[in-house]
Image (cartoon, rainbow, N blue to C red; front, side, top):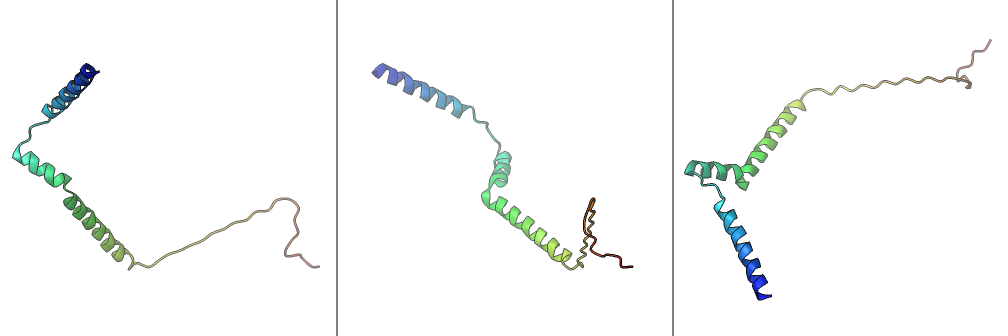
Length: 88
């Protein structure tokens, strides 16, 4: 039992160490670019800026007049009562 737990722990340590050594080395410029790209505050500011642009565009478009229309058509076939009878 003790031997199995040692083997298990050793295999986990080897797997973790291989994952750690597989990381890519980055230059300072790559680190800065990644930090800016993945920064939550920067992303939130971009989203806020886009939201403000859309609100501005919507306010400009709300100055235009509204135009609404509606159309309908009905067709009956077969026997029905004539709503406008012709009197002779």
